[in-house]
Image (cartoon, rainbow over all chains, first blue to last red; front, side):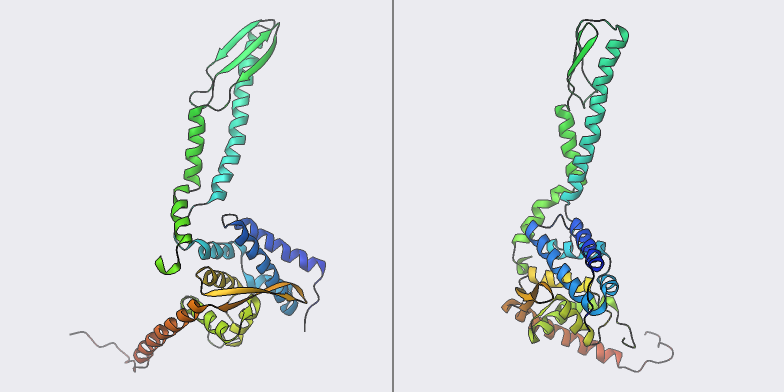
Length: 185
Length: 119
């Protein structure tokens, strides 16, 4: 006999579907949406038959399910992760931006502290390797900071680490294998 | 529940073949295939194992799909084998039969209490 699903049952299923979806971001957009819809539909069918708790238990952990879908899409070989690279890129940029801004602000604060009524233009080379030059213009103790962004070497380092974190050198091989007919692999 | 639980590693090796065989008999959507597998006695097979296996077979060109409207929710994705799928099923069946014959032949030998010493 079919179980009637309450909105709480549907929310529980949606939670699993969207948790799975978050783990499938490395799969091409269309395929990810197709997996999401199919899993939702299958879970709804299972929940109507055996109940939501049993349906969610039978599908297993979303981590393992996502790993199996990723292996189905890309094969069992080690692969790249755009998610890992993107997470690194976004998080590290937030931290680095905050550090560089604090460093430039610290330089300006130091100038004001040394001479509260100073007037002139002051230059600092920035944090070694990471930061471009910082220029502070002071007028009667009021300071304006310019520059101090990420240096060319800093950008290069950021990109290299993103490539390493996401194992992005594997991406071309993965794309080639996806494009090949299975028999040719 | 089956009296003897099936070894997941053994099942993993033949799951694709089983899926192709079931779908060659009748096209089905994901959860229906799981129910059909359970009905054969393989009630330890989890849905989380079957859905990615179907996805892999589709990706490999062995299965094709079509969406069928459902009265009880979103449209269902029905799977059925392609020509490549039927070829893979035939080749896999031959391979399995040969292997099973060899394994059965060996396993059906009487087992002595103590293994005899080599020459």
